Image (cartoon, rainbow, N blue to C red; front, side):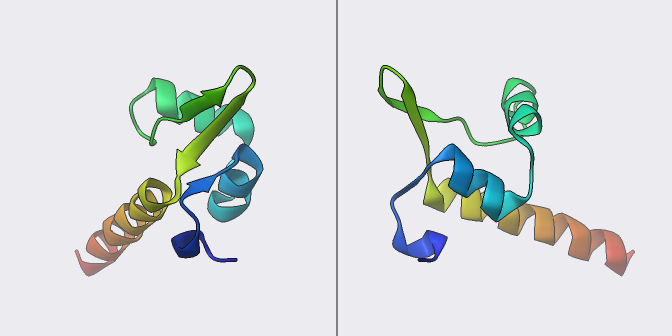
Length: 69
């Protein structure tokens, strides 16, 4: 199932989609460079799929602008 068809993603799915490690994801969140997770239970967090896809698109746009210069 693609990210666009899901409302939320688990950490495992975010890791698969972004190819980032768990420590890197949480470091980027602390640094304000990655979408924040939402707590949905005492031991469960998820991310909005739309925010992760938007972040990936932003990174692709950064790459495209860098290649154009």
